[in-house]
Length: 352
Image (cartoon, rainbow, N blue to C red; front, side, top):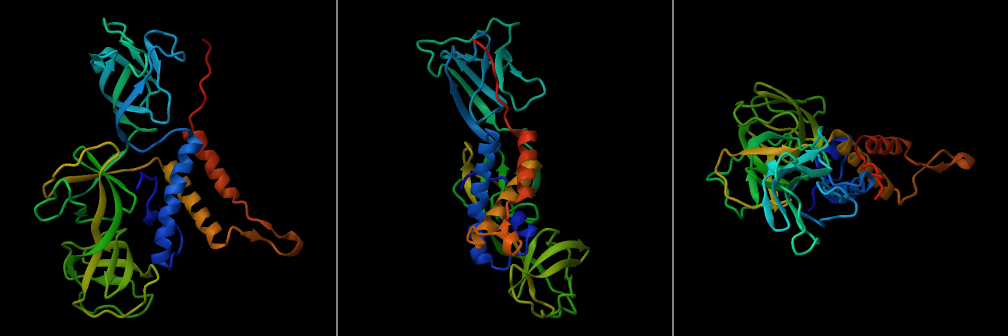
């Protein structure tokens, strides 16, 4: 799975999805397609990737001997090492531009030093930059911790968390220096049960009484009681307020003492986006990467448009009789234009 700009849960929360088994696979595929479509639109990749990029030096697009433009879809966020013509430079030997970056689109020799770019035996790939690359500043925030008893090894592919409210399928998360991509979520016992008087089989009965606040579900989590899924909208003390019959499950009555499960076991793709797998102890912080809001908004819009098109056999129309016409999705075009205006890479024109 490649990095995407929204989650399955964010797409499903925008519409009433009642067929999870079929819809999940369709939504996952369309999210991946929409994310790469956004990359193509903006001429850059926005997900964080750690690794090495090689550039020819000298290069015809960089006629000044102290400046190197950084072409390609990956843009520099932070620099770890610089090698020019086989000679190691320090990050202090170079200056990154523009000054309001990251991301940075060019690197220059710090002319206050004696350093210089050099081609070595050949100009081909002689300038080697290693660092973090992304098409926008990397916004990562702590969202949970590892709750696996004994932690996880460098080959483990499941993470248990005490709160999954802001972690969804397709989320890019980071433990230490390793990034992972969430590929699935399954339910775990929260340790709290349904308290008296239980719940009736009525849509209006949205208050879930809990025996304890310890381990209780948080707003944004999906819970399961006796097979019925419910989306938690809010929790106050030992009462969770939910949307009943989520994901097309059957509305049912639930007796006091029933176990409350939440989707807190994450299946993850390890060593993602140029990082290296490692072992982690219980309590290790989990950080999530949050894409730019315009990226996520457009990816959701494109995904929903794809769902509507596929479910209609690419025959969506509005109006009747002689007034019938194709539904062109003016709102999607407006969102596309807005995202390109904010994040699209503009052409650079110069003379040699």
